[in-house]
Each structure stands twice: as C-alpha cells, then as structure tokens.
Amino acid sequence: MSTVQDLGRPGLAHLAVPHAGALDRAAHVLANRLVGNPPHAATLETTIDGVALRFDSAVAIAVTGARARVLVNGEPRAWGLPVLLRPGDTVDVGPATRGVRSYLAVAGGFDVDPVLGSRSHDVLSGLGPPPLAAGTCLPVGEPQGAPAALDMAPYPAPAQVETLAVHPGPRADWLSDEGAALLFSQPYGVRPLSNRVGLRLEGRPLGRRTPGELPSEGLVWGSIQLLPDGQLVVLLADHPTTGGYPVVGVVDGSCAAACAQARPGTEIRLQPARSRPSPPDRWRA
Amino acid sequence: MSVRCLPAGPNALLVELEDQEAALALAAEIERHRTADWLGRVRDVVPGARTVLLDGIEDPAAVAAELTGWTVAPLPPAPAGEAVEIRCRYDGPDLETVAACWGVDPDQVPEVHTSLAHRVAFCGFVPGFAYISGLGARRAVPRLEVPRPSVDAGSVAVAGPYTGIYPRATPGGWRILGHTDAVLWDPERPRPALLAPGTPVRFTVA
Image 1 (cartoon, rainbow over the protein chains, first blue to last red):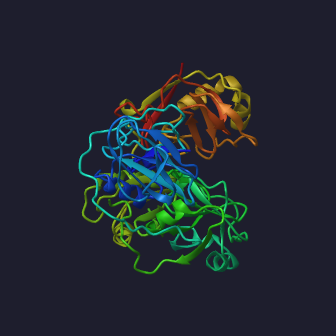
Image 2 (image 1 turned 90 degrees about the vertical axis):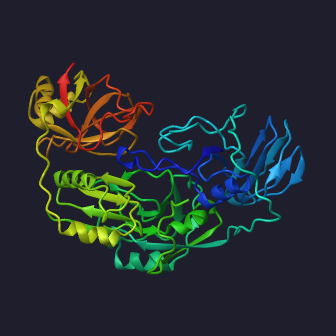
Image 3 (image 1 turned 120 degrees about the horizontal axis):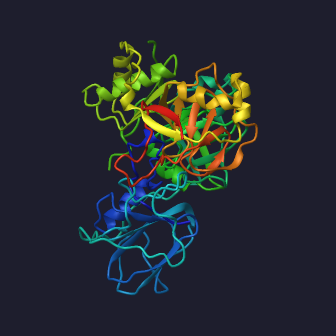
C-alpha cells in the first residue's frame, strides 16, 4: 500500500479526526529537504512493497526511510540522496529490505487536493486521497527550492532490536504488580496486523489489577493500550481519538521512526523514559 | 468539582472528572482560556466520557498545577435557539427493545426521546460521530450482543446513556430508533462536523 502523506491534520481530535501524517516523520522531512521542499510537502509513503512511478517532467526525487533499491529506467540510482529525472523517466522503488516504509519526495511535492488542510491519507477514517492504484495520476507542485548538494546523507538504519522509551501512562495502575514488572522486562515481537493505526506487540500476556473497560477517553500518539487478552498495541499516526482500553504507558515521540519501521522479526523492548525526555514536541518541524 | 490529573506523556495531560457534565464544563472553560500563558498553545482539547485530554502542551505539570485549583460551574442549560435540530423518522428496528427498557409502549418512544434535553458530550469512533448525552442513567440502553455488520448512514441509535447518529455506513452495536437526513459530516463544509462537543441537540419527529 502506498499513500500520500504530509505532516497530518492536527487540531481536530475533538471531532474524532485522527492526526495522520507520515509515520516516520524524520524520514519524510529528510526526503523533502533533499529535494528542496518545505517539511509539509506531501510525499509518498510505501508499505513493504515499494512503488513504481513515471514522471512526465524533469524533477528531483529522493527516497528515504526503509532501505530499498531505487531504479530509474532500470538503472540503479542512489537511495537517500537527490536523484535528477528527465521527462518520461520511470522510478521503481523496490521492496523494503530493512524496515517497512520508504518515503519518495518529489521537488514541488505531490499536489493532490488537501482535505481538512492536509494531503495525508488516514487508514482509520479514510480521509484524504485514497491509496495509490495502478494508473493513479498525481499532480506535482512547483519546486520551491533547490535539491540538496550532497554526497551522502547519514541516516540511522533500522535495528534488529528497538528499545522504546516509555513515559508513565494515565492507567498504569491498571496493571497488576506482575504485569508492571513484565512490561519492561520481557522482549516483544511485532505482529503482522500492525499498521498505521498501531504497532501490535506480541509477548506474554500482562496481568491487570482492574477488570473491564474504561469510559471512552482521549488518546495521544504513542499510547500503549492494554488489550483484553493482555497484549499491547502502540498507537501511531492514524490512531482513534478516543478509546476504552487502559493506556499503561506512552512511548516518547523520539521513537516514531523505530515504531514506523518495526516489522515482524524486529524485537521490541520497552524501558522507562529518562526523567528528562528528548525534544519536548515531536511535532515541531 | 474535583479533578484528577493523570500523566499522558511529555506533552499531554488527561484530566479526570467526577462525571460527564463536569468534563464538558471543564472542556468549555479550557476553551475560553485557550490563549492564556499557563496553557500555552494547546493543540487539542479532547473531551471524553468523564475526562478531558489536553494534547500538545509544553508543560503538563504547570497545567496540572493550574487546573487543580479551579472551580468550574456546570454548563447552564442551553438557550433553545442554539440547539441543532435533528429531524428523525422513528422507524428503527429496535423501537420495541428500547420501549421495553424504558417501560413505555413503542409508540411512546418518540415522545420520550424528543422531550429530553440532549447535548453532545464528546466525539469519537469516526469523524463527526457524536456521543449525545440526555438519556441519563434512568434510560440507559444496553448495546447489541453482536453488532450489525452494517448500519445505514443517518441511523439514530442509543447505547448506554448516549444517543448517536452514524455519519456513514459502518458496523454498529447501538440500538436503532430511527433515521435522519441530516448530514453529520462533510469535510468540505466550513464546519465539517454538524455536532461538536457541547452542542445542544433537539430531536424532533420528522
């Protein structure tokens, strides 16, 4: 699945509109910077399978995020750097070899009509432009700046073991003592059902002190919900705005890339966030 | 009004209130203070069933300290002119079940439902879906054991103490009283949601 993403549509959660936006925000912003775009320009976010496009005009593109082969007219070109295209060139971003989501930016941004101020597709509510299908045509905006003149752009590769920093959640007291101890001590796998709504973890079930559900309450990005079966899900960009499962922890915003690129086979560990968390507002461009 | 401030990460605060009315009153009061220094540029004020979430704040601890000292009066009943009118054809498949719950005849359900004072408590589930309070504990209705795989857009339904109107066809476990032609959600409108938190609602028989 490939979708158009930008920085999302914040500020509408009270109307049950998910925030949406690029799941690996840093990769999206970097891709934009490489082609001279502002951070809010829309990119394409791929999911595991990559994407193939033909560009009708001469433009710069860049592919970041999950590592993938980049072919232009069948010839290998750079991943993670600006690539200059001629009119009619085809770009084939291959399947992710590490991680899940690659980001393809084009100079000028993908210029589809915004919905509620954003070009992001949200898989939970369906708002925004639909996922790409064969034959989909995407308009491209006017380039605002020049592509970066770089030989290489360092970017941390997804790891095999990702440790997520976790702040206390509003309902941490719903865990039993055993559950609370297990939360940070056990390794987790990643379930294939994971998507833009949430990263589903797999581990030994966590016991709870309090049975049942809560009356619906607001949710933030990174909320770790304790499901009835004792498993956990980390809520990501398309998360529902309210819910009744207890939130036992909140993942720090600095872990967004790790959450976006974790796939079945990645081992996840949770650890308490340091008392001084990293940059306060992850949504700052 | 007693508030309990709960942690929700480095940029948010979950404020728990005694009940739904207190949550709505607090949300309204916070909206009035949206530009205050102590609040900063809060990105989202999200009411829940008995909570208010503040998301996108620089200093949750400072906000918590400020809120703990507040006394907020319950919202007064809304002037009649402010209510959004929902014209409803009371022809739903669950009229008999709801009537039995309420201890009335099925043909009295419209009169009971339209006589209540309704107000949007919070939104959730899908864009534009409003949990409309008004039934109270007395007329709370249990959900279906097994949700229907598809409920028509415009269905007016009840569950627990709330009335809800499905903005589009989705699976649904609420008890359906009837249908409305009102458009609950249109992202192209200046106000995309017809029913936002705090909005008074008046149901009338179509």
